[in-house]
Length: 427
Image (cartoon, rainbow, N blue to C red):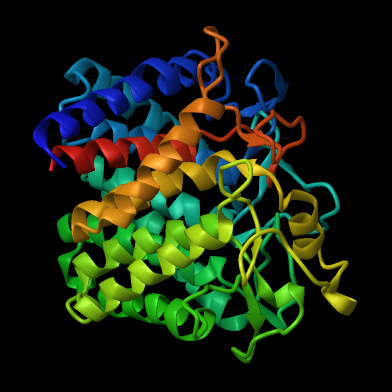
């Protein structure tokens, strides 16, 4: 990439972040009465459908604002960064008060009302129905602790992390919005833990250097779990395997999530920068191969864009799941497999450009350009009062009405990927 192209892309993404994404959220998200953030908007961003607060999303908001406040790039003024810090602390305070299931019981609830009162999600009989919510809160608190050199926030993050590790080991956890029995394992667990440990490690370098060695070991284990147990001989990551780490031969075990795979590849790139044991040419080659396979499997050759779910052999889902057809994960995959989802594409933008810059392989640049062309033709809302991305499209690139995952419009993936692209282009 020459200097002119780098500057062009940098300016493009700074404009996307400041004049489109933040334009939408800064005027709409903050709950100035109760704390926390609103994000239960419809797919287009036109209507706030509910004031409920999903703890998963609250943690993501805090991480985003703390990350914006501490960007190395000169995208924002000190006054703007001061406002981002205020928002991050405000969201952190809401989580301090309301995210735990009970005082000193380090499990996060999944859902609250606008005032922070705990609620059961539809169809659930437990409040702590998703360990993923805990993970996003850990990331949020680690980032704010690092931002403010705040040991109280840091201790909260550590206690919640240790609780998560205990529950994962014991099998006493839930995975809404994609629940499954404990006779199965989800790729999402080692994937998100790779990211969680990286966030903790970055903060520990400043706040508790003595913990860094242990975190490196745990990071290596999470990465190896993905590569040794979920990645098959054809470099495809399976979303679900049995709890004994064997593969499931029907569609329940052979469907792939290209977006998850592509996202996890940059998580592992981050891990390589931390762990000497992981930082090998062989692992970089494997990351490249896995990414290419996911892109090839997920790309819609007829209409463009990446399918939300695909077959191991590429293209739309084929076959059946037998007696597992009614598993919630399978029902969700069937219903949404042909859709084009915002976060899948923002993750692909970042991973392909990063791999191009790390390896110089033209194939990754070609993929980046193909994805960029699709994304900015289809996802940004043309309404000048909205500007933020439409989240879910059908196969043909038309907006859909139904939510994907949680009934929220979540800024996390797009904002995270765009700010990471800006940082990448500033290196």
